[in-house]
Image (cartoon, rainbow, N blue to C red):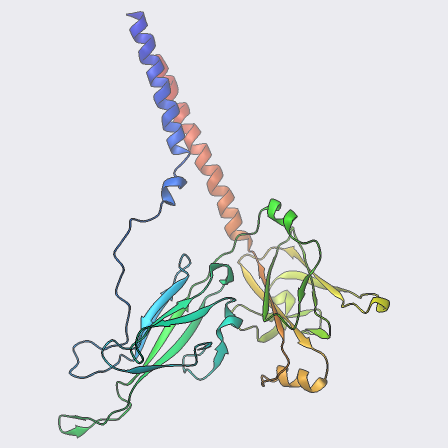
Length: 345
């Protein structure tokens, strides 16, 4: 009889240990991939229940934080043309301002498959180029014009022939690299040169960022207390650095004998409450005319390099640490409550 009781107590102890182990590993189940689903039909601008080929006024799509692409069709039943050109995208709701896609998201592209006029378009945005702020992109689909009548009355040629495709690229909170990864990175400053369209970097209160412009280029804004606000992804609005983050930018002049570029260091004193996006520009300094042309938004044959800097906020990291500690405490508390009762049984 005593041997039976001893076996029963041992089994109760094993059950308590197993329960604690299960409670300590809920995250592994939370990140399990969703079950495989059948592919959804490609969204289209076509207006349903229409006697003739007609487009909706707007087609709204979203690229979520875990997605890296989205597909759409202008029309599945009629010939329609997409604007702007393949390498460009509209950045305003009026579809009047075009920007090169890769200046917004490094490595992004628009692929097209299918017959002329009825193609399927897929916008690919690499996850490592996503930003901490939401960005809206636009395309415009236009049906081939045709004259038609409705109930005996002439209908405008443009009615039902233009569809605006709005793509919302949701914000992605980027994690800071592990210390082991930082050790493997080059020790020298990041260099933004004329051959680069854009460079990306991250900075935190624990790890300042050093960078410099390429040969023959100068840093903009020229005032060390100013920076470009990149919360909208456009790197256009010049604001005071302190209005975005508690940080300072210092300049170390290079030795004139070596004819090297000065090195700048961005140091964050206090982490912002939310993730923040900053931007600097390395602009060719060969002539003042080029500078004025770039600052006024005009086109220039000279290339500028955008240095987009991600400043991680304190809220997300604090929540992660608190949640992990809470999970461990709950698991051990439950095990401690169950174990004495099982042993005494």
